[in-house]
Length: 54
Image (cartoon, rainbow, N blue to C red; front, side, top):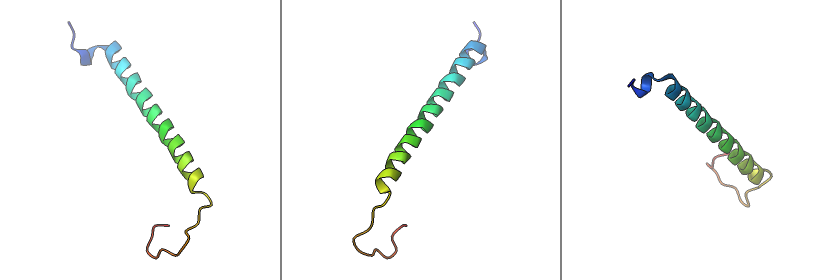
């Protein structure tokens, strides 16, 4: 029986799985950033905060 790493079907399936997980992560992160920027847009601080991140 060939080793799993040498089996072309197994390697292809693992590459597809990694690609699907990466695409899902990128999609989720894009959605998350769009929600965060939408919530952040137009908000103003009530008072000055020197040294705060801008």
